[in-house]
Amino acid sequence: MEKLLQTPEFDFVNEANKAFILAFDAEMAQLGYTFGGSIGSGFCWGRKMVIYTKADVKSKKSYARLYLKEDGLTLRLYFSDIDKHREAIESAPDFIKAAFIGSYGRCGHCHNQREDGSCGHRKCYTLDGQAIEFCDGYAFWFKSPQVGEIPEYIKLFQAFYPPKKIKKKEVCSDGQQH
Image (tube, rainbow, N blue to C red; front, top):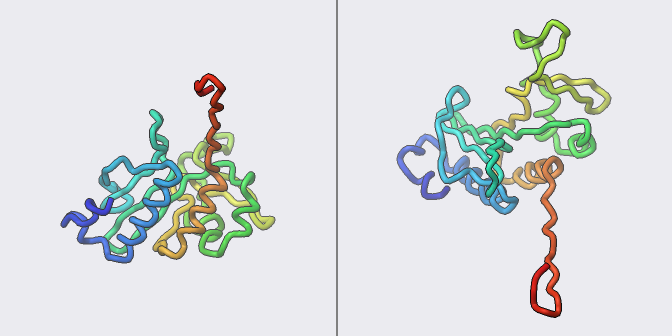
């Protein structure tokens, strides 16, 4: 990651945002997630985009993204079953809670809504006793993240994606692992 960010292609990213990217990348790598060694086009979300997937698996489900823009950086985390993690969110700092309760990403019951009122893109949950509806295309964005906030982002991430326990192999008297 460091080598990529040093190329002229990323001169538009300021040093503070590069520091965040490097620190966040290191944390994600420790948790077993990878950006795959490349930073792609940001399409409509920014100039460039870093996509984190689970390392060493065939499925390329996105767990986190960093949108690199001329005017800053946005961290996007992908979460489901918000109600199951209510306690972690409600006890989180305001900069974390804002991504779950703020106005950005609120469901506007757009053209995707079906005749029965349902929507495959709507995330419905309750926080602090308030029913909330978010559009999954715009949910859980953290704008202008700071290096000092990374422990809270990781704590939240691990609430939704706890580290897997590694099964210990037993070594028998014959020296074989089972």
